[in-house]
Length: 82
Ligand SMILES: [Zn+2]
Image (tube, rainbow, N blue to C red; front, side, top):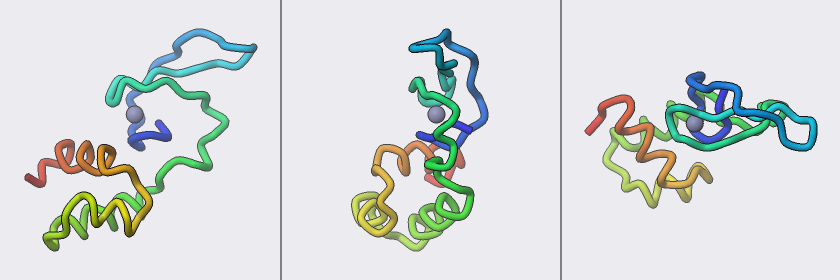
């Protein structure tokens, strides 16, 4: 799972310092897989999206959840909530 957007849409992207890196095809960020514990879980994503549905601004949701508003914006677009 991509630690930036939580998607599983990634490909292998070569090795850096002996570590396999991956390129997320959804958000185009590179990451190393052993940091999965830092990934946003499904629950936090649902929470953020629920707050959005309740009418909170991206900035406010970002403050409440500690998720970058760009990531929330990505989720909103991906799940077609707009
Ligand atoms: Zn991603």
